[in-house]
Length: 145
Length: 196
Image (cartoon, rainbow over all chains, first blue to last red):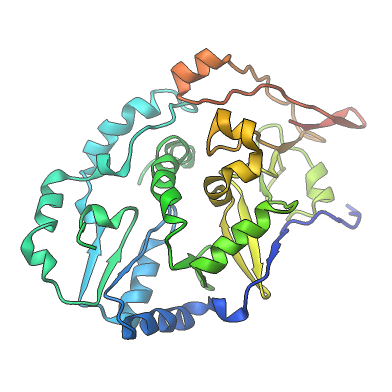
């Protein structure tokens, strides 16, 4: 097929007037920047992760680069998959396409038994720097931060 | 893990994105840095300040989101040519070209393109984006979906029936119903391209 020249912009962008030193590229630059924050006194690095992000890649980059004393993963404190499936089944319904917009909050996904353990005095004495990785809402498990 | 792509999408749309957005909205003002890992081989990071400046710049000017194309049962060949799309898929049925909860926004920071969910703009600047009266009615939601639907040299488009307000609130938990569909057709031979 002889195609005409397309003038459709598939990657439109918005120019933002910021300095070049506000941006970093590649894990080496990114981790070095965060390491600088640690050397200036940052005690805890917490990373909120949107659904769909390759979590393990992010965790590996920071853990290998920063060697944190502790790594907390909020996913370790969730209810079990069967418990979560049961909880969201009302919103997902039996329909293959349609469902209901969920009114759940992240607290609904937390396993109360694990939350209680994570708030123990021993947790509060952990050495720094600490790395709080994993999905949403790290402070649910570690309100001291 | 064994769920189909459609089931995962449905779960993301109705549950995961909603829960995550409720966490994200109050954090946008507080984050120190924003990571863009959309390209796993080339992660990028900007300061939270630069990210928020990007949202302010965007909402104060005309802008476009990054369009998203997908094949489908009725898909045609018109968008492939007009939008210069790859040959791989058998057709292109959809182009989401301003559905913020499903499109990205590219922020050009000194030549470095930071890709963020366009929904971040809706969550952080809803009033400036849609105006006082729309914000008063819908809150932090963008109540319009702009799509191109292509059927040229493709199949028949689906027949869609949209419910009234009370029904969509009671059965789907949504505050927004499709009030109107604007259609423009471009004729080529016997096929049509529809803008829904």
